[in-house]
Image (tube, rainbow, N blue to C red; front, side):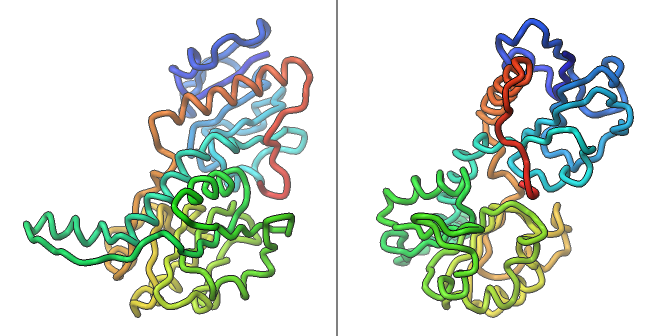
Length: 303
């Protein structure tokens, strides 16, 4: 069973694998380690956009594509029928939920303002708002959303969870029109699908209460950029985003200069422990595949 992974250090991180698993490193460039026709289990490069120098036609025996990302939107329409696509749900839970908490706190406690004052050697004392007691609406109740809920609760926050379908303790997405006006913070942590693309539009933003904070840790196209720029320009809302549309953000884009925005360059999941957790998942999946067991994190309906 031939396995391709994108990182040389991943070989050691995989640990002990079934003896039939032969692991080779293919970073995704023009230099292929061997005949791709024998590859059964492929781990593409992290943050790959679904394009590869190799056509899927050359992967004659391919059975599994295991992603290192939680989002699968770049691959769902490219992976051939009969090939199982799996995402890395769970790998990014701690890092992305940490970023959301940090972004909320930095925005509410006005850290960008104080950093600017520090650069200017200016003592800019002021009282700020606080997270305690805020109503935080988390749109996306998957593994990352649940991790975020657990991290928010110690801040005297009772998160309100929203998912595609209602279940105990979780509201359905159809309830958003009535939930948005009551939220102080709205966090987007949904996968990018046909249903979520452009979900945060002018109407969505208009329903948010004055002074509320929008946090996007999902994908850039979940938010309509023109609508966000227009709303932030009025000063009525604030936002913290780790993802943009387009991405990377061009240097002359108006999003850079709108008031009330905290922006980071898609770094929520980029942490020291990422590859260790990712390759632990890959090792588990290879072991399951070799034993003929069902794999976890299979992508269905786009995620």
